[in-house]
Image 1 (cartoon, rainbow, N blue to C red):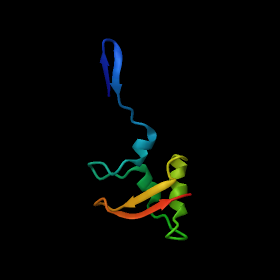
Image 2 (cartoon, rainbow, N blue to C red):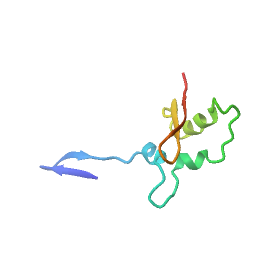
Image 3 (cartoon, one colour):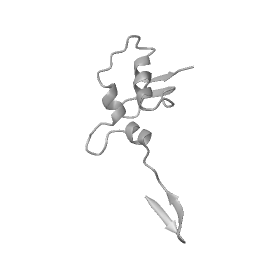
Amino acid sequence: WIKIENQKIDSYQCVVPTTWNAGPRDDKGQIGAYEAALMGTKLAVPDQPLEILRTLHSFDPCLACSTHVIDNHGGELVRVQVR
């Protein structure tokens, strides 16, 4: 959306690819791009899930240096941080 006042942009909102791809399931239960890409991913070392980071980096290389995996109630299942 965009709001124009006195022929000038007063405020706006962008829907950028990272926001769109990282979005949760929609109101119809359709999954987002990140979730779809991660489904069925096998982890070689479960407490160091580099496969998750690599998959998310394929969408946005700056994004996955810290990743939180949560359940459908918002509870954190795992937190991964690359140093």
